[in-house]
Length: 314
Ligand code: ADP
Ligand code: MG
Image (cartoon, rainbow, N blue to C red; front, side, top):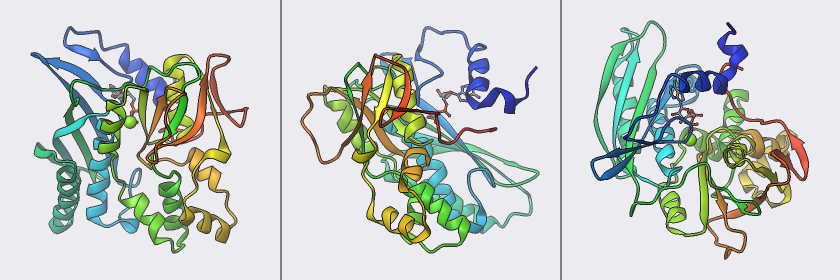
């Protein structure tokens, strides 16, 4: 039996998925940003996200409010990735018994702020002791708007790849925080990501969006999920990638390549969408690539790349 490291995050999820048979209420099970489940004549979207101290966050580089905000924002982003509207959240929390209660209250404030910012309600959770470190698990329930949602699968050959916002800021922010460099805008992007709920719903309303994902693990990896789910390849055009001025300045000052952060850095929580090619351009989206049925995998400027980005257990 291989170890979890040998199997990797996605190999492990595949094994777990084999233990989950279909069910009449389940429209989409494991494999997308949210599960899609039928309840009566309604459809709900479900996801959860774990945040573990010293894996996902460090107390030295974030305030407790930031830690709570980000734990909730990363879970809420999976509703954005379906084009849905968050309805309510549950928070499971564990910490060592000698943790300062005011600190945990501030973590809770950060969670509550992110949840209410999306128009959702915090309705419950669970609290226990941990032997080491803070553990936060945020479960979100959402619903499609006007009955529509977008999956990771659905990209068509010759669709273009569009992204919202600017990429690479969050991972450059982590770089700055771990190296002790002063870069407030980048640090803020790392600590305080904003789930793109309105953008997801807007993309969903457009008839020409075919597939959607949030960029939690880096553009190469997440665009690769869109391509893989459709059995297609994706070619990313590096010259089309928007480079935020703060990222350009930071990389120039420290001899770094902004493309590294943009292509492989995670936790931006922007959205990546497959759009019909003859689309009217819109200021909210930058076209950064094209899907093809001539090959599979991810290429950057026509050159095959390994799926960069973050995977657990590596
Ligand atoms: P995301 O980055 O959008 O949070 P993940 O890469 O974490 O998505 O997960 C991919 C898919 O695998 C999702 O559909 C998720 O619900 C499912 N998944 C992850 N871990 C487990 C698990 N332990 N048991 C069942 N399903 C899981
Ligand atoms: Mg996701």
